Image (cartoon, rainbow, N blue to C red):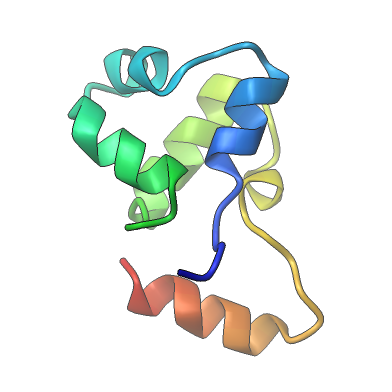
Length: 79
């Protein structure tokens, strides 16, 4: 599975857990766990909500590669 988001990395950097995130945004802990392992992706609204909650730019939650168009296509395809 291709790594599309950095949610787990940012949570670890902030000493937070996936369970904490799920409680804060009102989502199922299993869904958040799947996002953290990149088995699925949050929708864009949720991604912005996570960024706001963690006080980071939304771009910090997404892996950046040289081929931005391909990366964006992959992210949207996995929503």
